[in-house]
Each structure stands twice: as structure tokens, then as C-alpha cells.
Length: 233
Length: 205
Image (cartoon, rainbow over the protein chains, first blue to last red):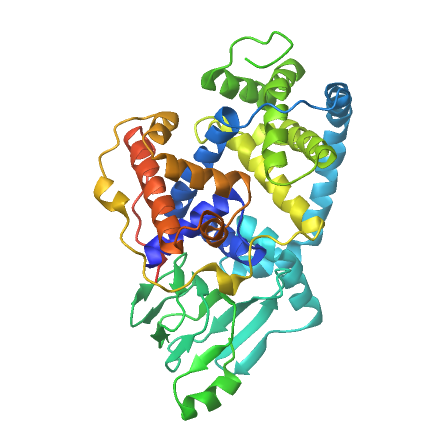
């Protein structure tokens, strides 16, 4: 089921129909997964093929071609300015980027998290449900979902819980295991509606993951509901 | 082909070479040849996605300008020019939808029901695909599979929307797309697309 679900996600990612939050997760996963990139590439090749073979040739606005030529003449001179501007932005983000690198993140994922992390760095620290689990919210612009960057201490055992709606977790650092498998950095773990699991963080190092949920967790019994008050993710 | 400016016959190789020339040498001539070929197609793609004439014109221009600016990062070994330009156009479209507040797809909780996939007749049709070219591979798909794939790419439809429109069970839509993609992937793997096997970085559930 999960393999199939991931293929669906890759396909919808390539076709450009995923909601912002899921696209964000897949983007992040692709940063870390050669396997994922290969799957997406096939889907994108279908898009390229259809663009060439199946898109009727629409007539452009009569002035479009000349305007395009003007633009690239202009853009030739703009390139240097654009690079300078990009360098400036990059400099401003150094602090954020450093923090993300320390968490084992890089590339496009850093770009994606930039805004949220800048916020987290400068205006608030990591929040925590308790001493062992800390997080900060990542704004994906998608109100139906909740995305968090979560840090969990090595060796932490999380009580059994299920999910209403789909949960996607991208493991960025450390290891984790549950009833379904053992996971390492770059693994995208998809839990489906109603599946119960109790993750255990590996003993060797703290775990950092990006978690996307669409509805609150549902704990399995009364005792767990108390837990749920403190562990809402 | 369709260019009114007497452009030479276009092949995949020639398109790739043109884009490389733009990236490496900033060749305006090569770029305008690409423009004549792709801009009308990109516009068509955007029109199918629901944009109006003016929006599609404008966004096609922006897409091509980005092709000009980013061509230096194009690597012909990694992707065909058409694939690369498709992703630029797709990302432009996504940005545009976000800027204009157009909601992408349906609410998440409606995305996927949990009914198990029904067995698809295509399961038994899982034959070896020997054609290396993706066009050839696509020809091997059923017309139903092709239709569903086009809906997803062009009309900005999630699986569940396709199911609603076609009246097919969601499981059938999912099966058709999955098997179609598996088939394409298999065909492309045979033609040298490598799918490396690594321990981590997989999708697991």
C-alpha cells in the first residue's frame, strides 16, 4: 500500500496537482532519495512527451515574439544584477542555513524551510511537549495541514497511537523503528488512516524529522488520551 | 514543424542541442527557435489547465524567459529539453495558482478513501514492455490509461477528481495510473534509465 501510495504521490507531484504541503514533503524527500528522483523523472518525461506531442499549438499574441526578443536582450544585462541580488539573499540566510545544516539538511529543502526557520531562529525557540520531544511549526500556506520539524531524544518510546487521515514523516537524521519497519535518514514513512504504531527512536542519536498531518492523532485508550494532550503531533 | 518561420524539422536531439546551446553560449538564435516551438505548446498546456487567453500568453512568456535564464543549469544527460521545459511550465503554473489563490486539488481528507483497490484487468496485462522510447511506451497503454494520465497532467486533476468525472471507482483510477506508470518506468529502465537501489531514502509505510 505504501509503495503504491508513494507512486501516486510521485505521479501527482510530477503532474503538478499536489497541494502545497504534500509537494513540500515530496520536494524534501527527493532531496534525499535517488530512488524517488528516478521515479519522479519518469513521470516528468511523460509530461514532456505530452507537451510536445499532445498539446495543440496555440497561437501566441501577435506581439509576443518581439516582446520576448526585447526581454532576452534586456535579461542579458540583468543577469549580473540578478546574481548579485541572489548573493545578498544568500548572505542574509546564512544563519538559518547554518542551523539547518547542523540538522543535516541541505539544498532545496533549506530553501523551503528558510522562512519558517528564520522565524524560529529569531523570534522563538523550539517548543516542546516535554523535555524529550521538541518542535517548531513550518508554515506551508496550507491551513488544512500541520507540518512540524520535530526533534526527539535518542531512545524515546512513543506510546501507541493511530492517525485520522494520512501522516507523512520524513526522517532527516537518526533512526526510528515501529511495528512496520526500521527507518533511516531520507526515508519517507506514510501512515494511513487508522493504522496504529508506536515508534521507538534509535539509541545512537537524536532523531530529527519533518512530520505532516492533516488531523490530530487519536490515542488508543484513556491513559493515552492524557498523553495525547501533551503529544499533539 | 508547426513554426510559421520555416524552422528546420525538429527532433528530440535537435531540441536538446538547442537548449544546451542556450545554456552554454547564450545563443539568442537557438533560444528563439526553441521559443517558436515551445511557447505555443506551453500556452496550450496552460489553457488546458484552465487559464484564460491573456493569462496563458503571459505565463507562457514568463516560462520561456525562465528557460532563457536558467538554461545554464540544463543537463542533456539528465533530461530531454521537453521534459525540462515541462517542469519549468508546471512550476510556473503552480506558482500562479498559489498567487491567485486558486486551490490546488481537493481537500486532503477527500483525497483517498481506504477502500482496498479493486483488482484491475490491467493486473493481468502486465506484460514486458520492450520499447525504449517513451512515446512508444505510451502507445502500448490502453486508451483509458492515456485519457486518465492526460487529465492529471493537463487538467490539474487529482485522482479523486478524475474518479468523480469519469464515474470510475477511485480504486480503478488509481490502478490504471499506477500500472500505466509502472509500465512506462519499466520501458524506460530498459532503455538505460537507472533506478539505483539504496538502503535508505525509500518510501516506507
